[in-house]
Structure formats: C-alpha cells, structure tokens
Length: 68
Image (tube, rainbow, N blue to C red):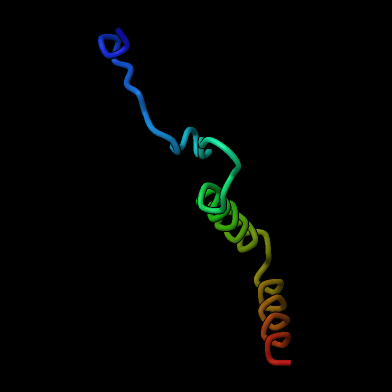
C-alpha cells in the first residue's frame, strides 16, 4: 500500500533539513558535517565583521603567539 502511494522505506542515518537523523547516541561522524558547516560560517562571519586594521592586528597577534 505504501509503495502505491510513492512512499519508500529508507535507511538510517540520513540528513533532514541539514540535521543528521540517526538512531542511538550521537557519534562524532554523525555531527561532523554540521560542525564543519558551523565553523565555516563562523570563519566567514569573522572575516566580514573585522575591519582591515582589525584583521591585521589579529594576524600579528596570531603570528607572535606561534613564534614565542
């Protein structure tokens, strides 16, 4: 009856609206894609929010911390 209506049985895990749907406790690989997406959006936001002078100061600060 379900197939006649065009409904098919799927398998877990799958993604629905960008959120992983799975059974049981979340594992690292279930949430890795979502975490990567958040980090990418944050990096993009940080680049747009800082002025050129602010980016220059941030780069200098990061390079001085890594050298010390």
